[in-house]
Image 1 (spheres, rainbow over the protein chains, first blue to last red):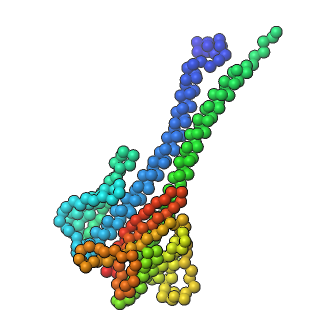
Image 2 (image 1 turned 90 degrees about the horizontal axis):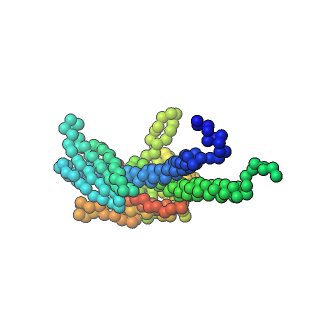
Image 3 (image 1 turned 30 degrees about the vertical axis):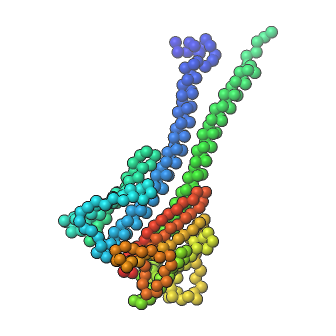
Length: 124
Length: 194
C-alpha cells in the first residue's frame, strides 16, 4: 500500500517535497534565530554593564553622604534618570540589624521590553 | 531507437537553478550573521577595555590615601592623574597590601599606568617603567570634585593642584574607539582621604 506509488512512478510526490522544504526552512530559521539571539543578549549584557556602573556610582555617592552626615534617613523613595536608565532607591530602617537598607532599582527599555536590575546594600 | 534512462538538459538546468537559489539564500543568511557578529565583537572589545580601565581606576582611587596631613601627593589634570594608594600583591599564596605610587597617563591613544611599590614609591628617579593598559583610546577626561562654598553641593574642577587636600570625588569620562565609538562615565568617591 505504502510502496504502491513508489513502484508505479519513479519521482518525488508533492507531499515529500513539501516536507523537505519545511524541514529545510526550519533548519535555516533555527540557525538565524541563534544568531539574532546572540546579538540581542550581547546588547543586553552591555546595558547591564552600564546599569551596574550607574548603580555603583550612586551607591558611592550615598556612602559619601552617609560619611558626611548629609543623608536624609527619612523613609522615602527617590527617583531620577540618566539617558535611558531610570532609577529609584528606598531607604528603610532594618530594626534587627539597626542598619538602613538601601534598595536600588534600575529600569530601562530595550527592544520594547522592560529590563530591571535590583541591588541592595546597608548604610549606617 | 532504444530509450536511454537519464536526466534531460531541462531537468538538469532546473535542478541547478533551484540549487543555486537555495545556496544563495543560505549564504546570505550566514553572511548577515557573521557581519553582525563582527560588529558585536567590536562592541564587546570596547566594553571589555572600558571595564578593565574603569575597575582598575576605581580600585586604585578607592584605596588612595594622603601622604601626610599637609601633603597629599595627589596631582591631576585633564588627562593625567597620580596619587598614593594600596595595591594587592601575591606573596607566598597570600594577598598582602602594599603602598604604591600610582600614575595614569594618556600617551597618544594608549593609557599608561605606572605603579611603584614600597621603597620605590616616592623615588622619582626610579627606573620602573609605566605599563600599557589599553590602546584605541580616543580620550580620557578627568574632573575633580570638592565641597563648594555652599557646603551642600560638589563643585568640579579640571585641574587639581592643591597639595594640602585631596578631592572627594573624581569624574572619569572615557571614550573608546574600535569599529564603534563608545563613551563611559563614572564618578568615583575617595573614602579614605576624608
